[in-house]
Length: 324
Image 1: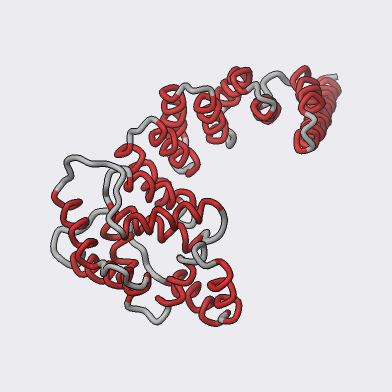
Image 2: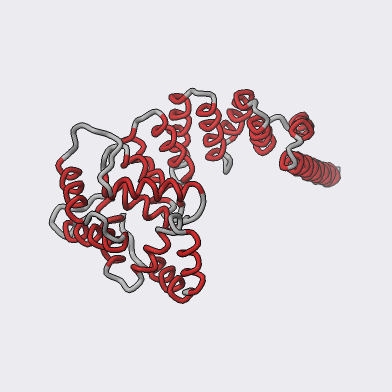
């Protein structure tokens, strides 16, 4: 009888486990249907599916996250906050994306401080989740906290150096602090990764403004910024060709970086890299890529007809060591 009771308990446990597995499979299928409807912009249909999943499992992290995501897409972002709180409470892989979405919702609803706090809380829990740093930088930028935005951009770049918009963000926030050389190099890094489109057009326009002496902020600057701004001005020849101007700037700044004490993120990551690039046989190709926005037809034709040079540049950039 004891053996029989144990056997029945095992069978009951196996049946319960099988039922739970089947239930989870059904919920996952419902959520997938909701995601498909969301992609088709049928937000009402998608939310119906998520509600169906949540009726079975109210704490399901994926269902709660997708509900918040769809509410935001439907223009009802703030209604998604309670769902995101459930995702965060559950922990797991969706914690980072939940804080990212929460911050974006607050940002879109003109609550910058709440957005900043959401990103900061997310970073404490998920310090390796790069989008939190990038979005934190955007929130700081919109709040005109440019120094804080610069630090956030740096952390985003450290986690994903190939994320073009983090490079762009660094260029913009240093531009707004009148750090002309860091801004120039950040924008060049962005254009090397993403040389086409409206953002590339804007980046190239800002680059030209920097070369002509433009800045977005007057006022006091630290000694390093004054030195770099002076170096840039001295290296730029009026009316000179872009390749010559950039080569002069990168060379002059690179030599400054060889002096003792130049060990910050800017000097290690940007100045050293562009100095090496300016001395390499791939520099002309890099300038073609940087200036693609200004001469779309000419530069594009050149790149198309010189695929070997483009490949050589890509290989050089992939192998070039960029320290943080």
